[in-house]
Image (cartoon, rainbow, N blue to C red; front, side, top):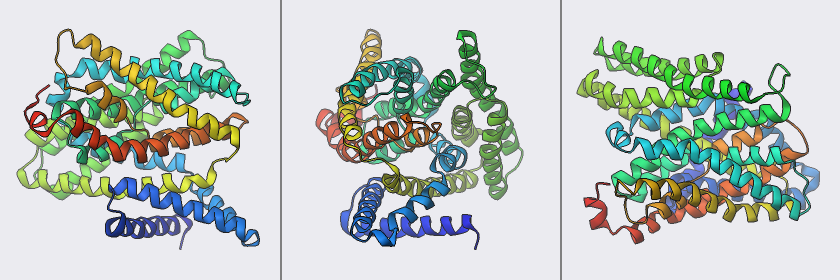
Length: 425
């Protein structure tokens, strides 16, 4: 058995066992239940390590996780499939109706949040006696600002938000992670230099952003368009499923080669195939098989992803200063989210109407997830990495568990079901 097949077998087995435990006993949302069980399993491993240090149980699990390389597995393996599966089920017409507010929140909102969180955390780290340069605080702001589409779309299915509000949250989360990754890469490039060793200036930053963001959109349109015509030319659902698989994997790899944003390219292609493709290029049979296939892929990868998030507690540092900074970071990030959502919605309210409590729901429903953890793990080795990883992990766990468990109740309290059913904006 190869190392890859062993790791895959272990992850799928744990996901199945933990999922069964959650289904039988905890009865929580699947992803939240997996995170909680995996996290407590990690704490149990740490406790056994403390009680029986000679067994080196924790060390063995840590080495397995390090070898697995969560950042690489997510960013260059699972993410493209998860984003495509999410975008495939998003109603583009609802998204288009709210394109301006979604666009502003996914771009300017992410950038503004990056700086708000970055400067605030620079003060927090100084106050708790942890020396972190400002540029790394801004890097933390970039990796924690985007809401995670995988976490958001999974929880939204059971939150029963009005369709219009769901479109805003889903649309923003699908695009702002791509923008967040671009901002993250730019700031890391400023901190450590570009891959060629040169320092990025203002022109280099603008060029990198254009290549990543705009290039991602163009690549997604081209790839999605080619796949659309390929799907339209045949009526064989097995082949059409393979075409979508080729689209996702090929598009992401081409984006990496061209230094464009793979996440943005895959999302754009997914929206195109999920709307125009389903409506104009597929038979009813193909549409059903394609939807079922990608729903299954989404469920399996979600289970593995959130299992890994729960297990990553074994890699974080439990230093007191790090944990204090992490606890202070939670309200800072929520306040930043409130500001960066509230200002655009307040401006757009001058000509549009929004669901009651939209700002509060968008704030609390903006979950952070695996993308933030993966970016933190991908940071270059240095004294800043352990503290940023710890703070990021605590924020993500709070977001998934606390916010994820309560966002449905918040929606019900702010928007009674009869109003949610009739609400169109």
